[in-house]
Length: 132
Image (tube, rainbow, N blue to C red):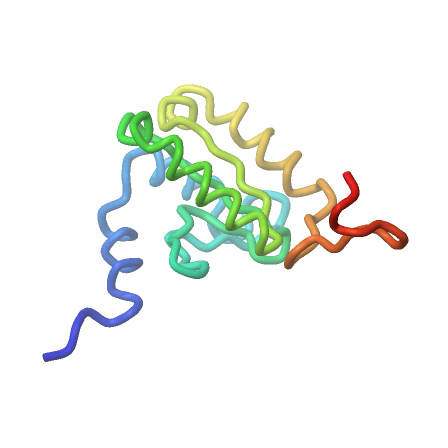
């Protein structure tokens, strides 16, 4: 018997979106924010990002109360995504629902910031790994 197809989880998450995800999606879909394309519930490695703009290397995560007990997990996840060249910004669901203009302004600022280098960071010329 076969297990679920690789994209089934993403499809399920898109169908079961939260109110905050729905609210933000209305503002970023169809290139509505700075003419940038966003995807929702997009797989990156073993993780599924709430929203991602691939061209800008920006991931947007929306956190609800369930994330209060997952700070260490979320931090490790963010570190891994950053090693892949992504910038991760997080907002609480309440911020999206109550202060959407502030959230959109923060996303616009992140979209226009220089992109992070991808892959492992190499030491600068002349430095060895042991120097610090």
